[in-house]
Image 1 (spheres, protein in one colour):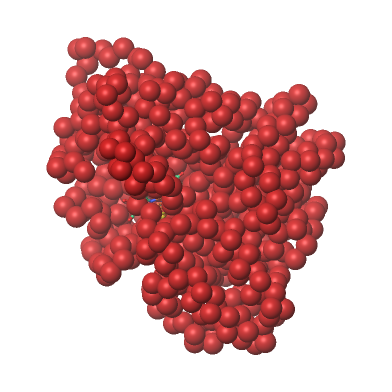
Image 2: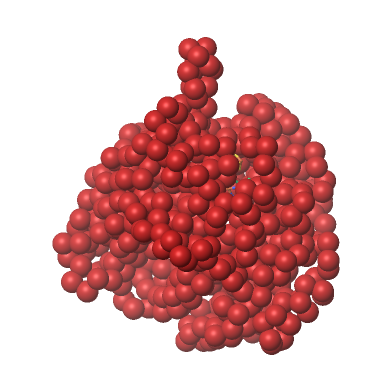
Length: 595
Ligand code: SRM
Ligand code: SF4
């Protein structure tokens, strides 16, 4: 690693330019200079190396197999069928392992080599998608509820999120100069960064918009969350604001911890940008720049107090926040299958295991799938037919995919394609499998301590067998696995979670709800698969016999005192008087229980 601190690197980078051009042009190595490895993150890319090959390469006295991960900035995860085809072609040409949908509704490409990085970036931009600020100490991809049914509310939130994402982009032209050959204006000096300043933020910053009753964005895991409050016809009245959510922690360091966002009040739609800017600049000025592990907004708030924080952001925004409005969350998963939007269009939510879209992967039942080819065929069909340009591909924050806005008369043809290409796995999959999340981990993630994405199908099969033995194969339990405690699959919000500690060893965490409102807690430390299954076995037996109707597994464990969750790790809904707006489901996915 660099001997320079990240704060110094940012400050001395000439607005994120560093020596990236020189690093990219150096043919001797597949890597970048050390400081540039930090700076490239702000351009949406990470230098990585293939960890499966490390020993072999070392033995052969070769440098590690360096390559780059590229992450898109796609607010709300929406792309057109045309863009889908372009991304597919880019992944097929330049990347390994297809397209990867992330837990923040972005695409990741893995395995792009340095000499092809610029061409890949240019191809992404030619598809009218960029990667600016997808990583780094800035505002990241803004997540939006994927809700396919409330079409008008989704459109309003998506527009709001896209505008906010634009507003919070860094001002520097570095991205355009390095990747898109924009000429640098010699006399212009360094650009002003009115929102970020010369050192950008102390740490990454994340924003998500939720539409109750679904909490698919896990709004309480965001640094800044907006919970949409709709009127009875589905129009957006405004948003409850949540601050200070975050998942990341470090094993054995009690100074670091996951934290749920605190609900601090309500804003009207036209106040969203002002309050977001006030929060971002407060974090810029007061976030911890000495200790990176303590630099997220959650620690700024805990160190200085929520009351202080609220007063400070109100002062900066120039208005005060009235009390939060009633809201209720029912679920933080996705609703699979066909549904109908209020606009009469059809929407299809597909399960994409761990978000990895490839041909030939296993779907957990040993079947080869052709997801990349299948989605290509669907995109082509939609393009052929898209008379009114309304169909879109919408990634969900649970790594799944909604094909939204399909003309109803195309349903049968889309259904035929999902069957042909094995994209209909959601119909037969258990609720456990459908709802499971796994972060990337090995072989690309440099921070992984244990497997996650690659282990998920096998792990699920074993947990499914255990559930079946107790006669509860259809239990809609949310299981999440991360290869380390950073929490990229938001594991601390899983009813069951495995958090990697070492190869084959995990912390077993239990007791979150399935609404994203309660964190789980450590149940067993540093155990291997056999012990994980043995620990779950008696709990499943009890759950099978003693659960109340519709009681979730996490709720059951808390009620029975198997785990105790402190009140600070719980966020309560504010009861609403009228029933939440009903959603029209036109496909009943067997065994899915929405609790
Ligand atoms: Fe993450 C770092 C992957 C969502 C918390 N995350 C990483 C890196 C870049 C590893 C690294 O720093 O070298 C991983 C790249 C792996 C790879 O090979 O692709 C990585 N994070 C991911 C993705 C792809 C996981 C996935 O399986 O989908 C998600 C990409 C999101 C996106 O599109 O922007 C991803 N990461 C998250 C989330 C979930 C979320 O945002 O909703 C979290 C927890 C929420 C939070 O931020 O608190 C998360 N990632 C982290 C952290 C811990 C941050 C902290 O506060 O401590 C790190 C490590 C770090 O920043 O130092 C990290
Ligand atoms: Fe990598 Fe850890 Fe994030 Fe998994 S949780 S992708 S192992 S940083």
